[in-house]
Every structure is written in structure tokens, then in C-alpha cells.
Length: 518
Image (cartoon, rainbow, N blue to C red):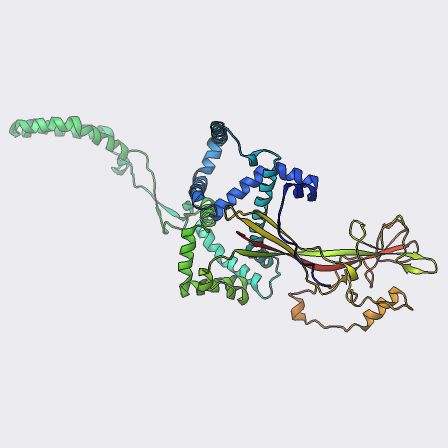
């Protein structure tokens, strides 16, 4: 089967095209979700720092706001959640006041207007491109490792890495009091330390010292000393009394940390969210990009990253696919291309007639001999064609005043159609002779097909696409048999089975090419 036809000339998508080509439910959904799509797209521009110089200040504000959220978000939600609603009310009041002062509203803000729908489509396309790129670069590789779909020992390496780093994680995240020791009796009770001497003994000693002062020492002391003593009695003695009271209070404890203060027993989930969030929000910033480019030019950094990727994934191909310094310094391409896989399926329907065996002659009021999953008539595999490629121009989300050309092209991945659930029947082998029935021809082709041995080492990591699935309830030729009402399908053929069907599959890919700033 040849690829789809030539691409149509690019043209601008108008409001009439949107209304005529899209289902009413999709138009209603776009109208309702247009504000949410706009907020999502605006946030995406702030996170990726693609809004130009005018929006970099907003990107910095978003970064600072996230830091404040991580530091004080829990306290605000616990003690003053009303502040969030008050802040939202204040923002909307300022927005309405500014719109009232300017005296007009933008046409794109009108609900259900052509400008709003067109803007929603453009922003949704930009968000879709970002989501597809993230899926190809990050989500799909991580999913393959977590689901053991990576050949080699990548998941095993990841398990070992998680087990090794778990004690380090506990060492940093456990509460600090688990790493502290107590030093007792740093504030002791002076009365107990003196052996429990009575308070009266202290008063008698103090009175004897005063009598000795008056009889022997006082006549020989100048008057200036009495003045100094009076000043000490007035200004110093009260502080000494308070210090003595503090020393004679109940014993307390002082704790000394036995481990370094950071990061041992110093981290929490709040710190992890803060670090990851700041890294994500600043990853696409100009200064972070320049810093990565400068670090990536170091051979030590490159080899360290490659070793870490190889250790976690177990794949040398993934580590070798990291960009070189020249590729990192190269300018970003103005054209992007993403592929989305699809599986086309059509059903072959037959009915059993007395004296005719199984044929494609069906009743007029029932499904056609070749149909889709909704029983609508489709072309058989020999003449089935992919949808025609299209090309549209949408307002550019990167360059003001220009457009982005979005081209969609369909391509086949499989070379031919195949029957779901079995091996040996395809569109190229399904050529029954005129003197034999379709079932006999399929059995003959299946018996003549060469049997291929698959090594056990390969079976552990890969499964052929045409391997029979355990959940497929079909016979050896891929048929499902049903009653006269095309119901109660199973692989059993016998009395009461007058209809049958089988599913033909073929994989295709939708290649979407975006040219920015055309």
C-alpha cells in the first residue's frame, strides 16, 4: 500500500472551517475550557521562558512565588486559608477595574467569539506539542524502564540504585532528635550540691560576716568605698539574685548534635519539593541554559553523566545518545516533528448459507462484508487507503505577526495487513483459489508458511507483534463465530453458529511537522 497522497497546499484555518469540521460537542468544550486553556498555555510560556523579554519578569515572579509556597504554604493553609480567597478576589477586582478604565475588552475575551475559538486552538496545539515532546523524551523512557520493556538489565540497575540510596535518604530525612544526645545537669540545684545545708545556716553565716565588717573593717575604709558599696547594692545585687535563682531552679538538659548539620537530619519533603520545583521552573531560563552549556563542555561532567545514565538504565545506546558539546551549542531547529502511532482495524464479516458454505453474501439490512468497529462500510484491505495529508497555517505562538505551518501526514508502519490473534494470515497470503473455499485456502497458506524458531534469550525481552494473544477468543484462522443476530461470539463453530467475523490490523503513524515563523 502506497503512502497517502500529496500534501494539500497550506491555508489559514477560518472560523467557518472550525464550525463545519468539528463536532458540536468539541466546539462547546473548547468554548467552556478556553479560559483554562489560556491559563495553561500562559503558565507553559512562563515555565519554558518563551514569552520574550516582556514575560521574563513574570517568570521570575512565578519562581519566587513557588519558593514562598514551599516555605510558607503549609502554615498559610493551616492558619489563614482565607488569605488565598482574598488574594483571588483582589486580583479579579484589579483586573475588572483596569478593564473599566481602558473602556473596552479584547475580542478574544468574549465567550464564544471566533477570536476566542481560534486562540484556544492555537494554544491547545502549542500545549499538545509540549506534551508530545515530554512524552517522547521523558515519560516514555521512564515508563519503559518501570514496566521492564527495556532490553538488558536496566530495571535491575534501577532496583540496585534505589536499594543503595535508601539508607542515604533515611539518613537525611529522619528527624533531628534521632541523631542527638543529651548532656545532663548543666544547670544544677545549688542547695542539693551543697549537701542539703539548711537555709538558716546560710542566714547565720551572712549575719556573722556583716558583724565582722562593722567591727573590724569598716573604720578603716574610706567613704568612697561606702558609696561604691551602696551602688553595688542597688544596681548589681538584684541581677546576682536573679542569676542565683536561675541556678537553683530545676535541672534542664542541653543537646549536642553528633552529626554534621547538613544534609544529615536536615531535610524534609518540603526541601525536596523546593529543590525539584526550582530546578524545573529554571531549567529553560537563559542563565540556566548558559550554565548547562558551559558545564557540558567539560569532559569530566559528560563522562559522569554518561556513567550515571548507563548505571541506571543499563543501556549503552541511551548513554551514547546524549548530545555532544557541538550539538548542545547548535541553535534550536525551527522545525519539529512528532510521530503518533495508530492501529487501523477492519472487520471481515461472513454468513453461512446451506449449500454455499461461508460466503460474504449478507442480508441487506445487516452489516456490510467489510466494516469498522462501528459496523460502518469500509474498503477491504486491498484497496484501503490512508487519510490524505493536510497542512494548515495557524498564528505563531513563538513569533508575533507570523504563522506556524502544521502538516499532518499518514504513513504505514506494517508492510501488510494481518489477522489479529494468529500467525500466518496476511493481506499478501490471503489469495484463495477459485476452486477452493476461503477456509481451505487459508489452511493451505498457513501450512506452507515456514516456521521460524525464536531463541529463548530473545523471548525473555521481546515478543513478536503478531504473536497470538491469550485474550483473543478466535480459532486457528482468526474467526469468531456468532449466532444469527451477530451476538455471543466465540471461537467455537457448530450448531446455531450462522455468522462469523475476524479482525484485520495494520499499524500506521501520524507524522506531524510544525514549521515555526513561516
